[in-house]
Image (cartoon, rainbow, N blue to C red; front, side, top):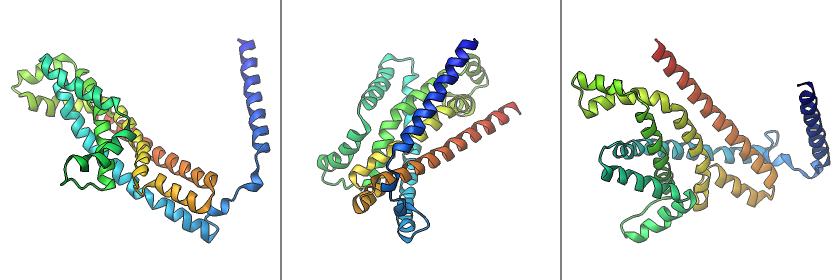
Length: 257
């Protein structure tokens, strides 16, 4: 045990030394942090421009996750049917949608749907929402299916014994318990949605990544701009993760009470 401890700390020390040497070798003099520094007028202007994309990122992600949750629940229900044919519909949808990359789906919705019908005129916001919601709905369906199937059979039999129908059983017995169990994976999907929303920048959506790309083109300072973009996503996802964890604790305390 002592030998393992010595080896562990030796490896950690070597990693710190290697990291220090790497940082020392960087060309810090060539960096131009003034382009994103709040102490300069140029930096403040650029930061405000970057932060302006936060509204579109949040609106698009929240709208898409809301639609995908509703759609995912509707898709999950056939997967719980005793009929093999009905369950097959669920499997076909889930497997087909999960097989398509989100970027490809974004292009298909934005450029393909208007070709299918002349009356379809879709803007970049709704193209992103539809593509993200469709892609995520397949994952949401699997989450809901697993959560509903995890409910004990006795709970369902008790609901039947008091005369609750199919939808009443879902609403009052199954879904309230299932939601508490699937909240962590639902929170993961929201984080995933926030990150995947950056792909909508390829069709011109003015969210965080698109604005960072535009600043890079105008300032020619990719390291500084993208460093701020990384920090924005880190803070945003940290806040969302903390919110999900708070909601988990709140639901658990309510269940215990």
